[in-house]
Length: 316
Image (tube, rainbow, N blue to C red; front, side):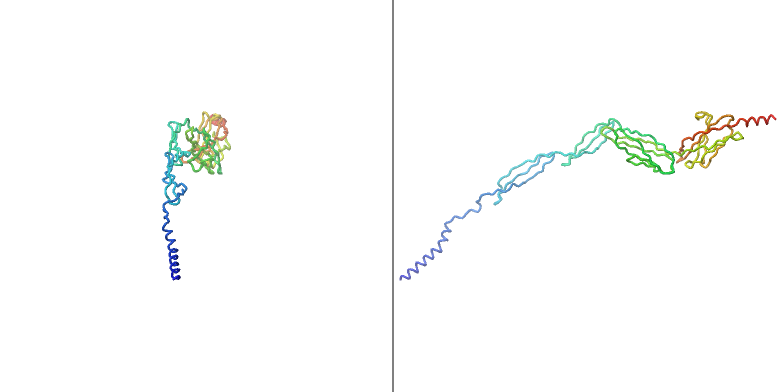
């Protein structure tokens, strides 16, 4: 009997031990998973509109919970306008002495443009330069054009003759060997804030070399024979004789068309007068005549005795 009682008691105790945790858990209230302490994240930017040079920008600064991602705050912020940054500009309309010009600037930030006025030029950028005359040479020769403008800026140069070349930037002229002729050299000055650019045309001429009279001989037949040194740089000669040493009056001109000629005989000129004689080289290029400088003059005289002798012979 006693054993049956103990066994029953043990069974009751075992049952109670088994059921106790279940009863305890049944008495506890479960937690709400949606309820917690928010943890703010770092602000993030949303709805950003960039500012320009003409308009303000904006954005929203938003804070979310790191746990549940709920939006905790939202602030609307303004971005200040940008400042125009203008480039150096380009001249889109040149100013002259008669009208104003225009200069256009572009913003490197937004691409906007603005136009400013350029005042009228007060003067032309006048150029000072002279014509050049040089002499035939067997070798190529170089020369420097002396030119300047009011603004003291660099000039540019152009030649219309390939035999007389000019450096565009330096004005250095190179003449081809054995060349006779001319070139038109155009010199240009730049436009500046004060002056309007302009151009000047000068002549660069290469003349034949001089010819020298070798001798003047008085002949017995009432003539003068003139001899000169032949000149290969020309195509002929021009000779003058005059009773005036300055050749300003009583002057006669003769043209010799062949450069191989080296002698001329003057006939039918009055006797007992002194004649002054000079010569220069002539070169024809593309139908245009170029002359060297005149030679030094030599003088000659037809003897009166020739005429007297003839008169005596007639009387006899």
